[in-house]
Image (cartoon, rainbow over all chains, first blue to last red; front, side, top):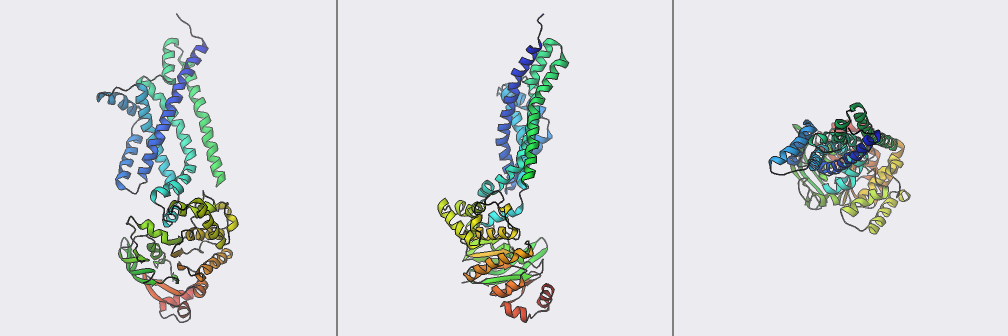
Length: 216
Length: 242
């Protein structure tokens, strides 16, 4: 029987943690792009766009991330599209993140007072220019802290990708545990690594929030 | 032909009639003060003139162009109508200079150097040339409102709408804003002001319009309206504000 040293366990978990970071980055980048579109549709003067956006947000926020992963992984296969676990997880987490980021950012945009819209309207700015020069720059300041906070949710959310067979931190933990039969030790390290990833971001979010309060 | 021609304008919020049949013609160079109790429709009327508010009946034209908030060309019209608000509404994330140059650059596509020259001139006109690089939050209320006036002037509007622009100011700051307005009036700027500053209305304005329950109840030269108000409503209003 092969024996595993502590270093074997830690090293393999660290290697797998790279995929957790990569998947988080993909989900955050994809979620930001799609989320920005969702937000723009959500605050649009066009009622149809608003309606579609609201429905999208409700569905994404009202269904478990796990189901979204299953639907992307098995569902796309039903249509003859063969997706790898990485692609399926990327799509599912992008959708998940966009539903939440879109709604977070909508709140930030709507926190900008009516006076800013009226002043820029009166100066003859078009809707696009108002968004670009007046509303979004101000909303972005408010959005920094909650957006950073949500990044933590995404990182933890990537753990579910293990269920469709994507080898990231959690899946690696399961595999190693199956070989070592030391669940407390292995999952202890898994949890520790998640914490090491998330805690600095939480600190950053809190400090950004404080700095923003002070700037008022 | 009047610069601003308001004919039979009606406006309802649900069942509540805010404006009923407003007729008002304003020639270029006129300075008109609209006075009246809160809820008389004066601010709503002002906001209809640049399409911030839609109206339900009648017509408003500015320099011959119909004001229609639903039209695709409403942006063009708004360039000819400047507006200053009670709460300043400066863009807090931009410097004073950027506040003033934003619309000329983005809307009129004027190059940066020309826009800056104009902005500095306008700021000098309101006595704030040295604040070009400051942020609005570092200015007093009176200074912020003067920047807002400079911002509106930078678009070279044909008419300037002022919606209770001294109402949010501390009493000692009101004077500096009124001085700027008086200077503009002397320079021939067409202005329509909703105001509670009766002395200013009397001394600077050509015409006084008293609104009551969504109608123009009485209008004429300020001197006559102040000394010999005809209707009991204006008499009681003047008593309550003096």
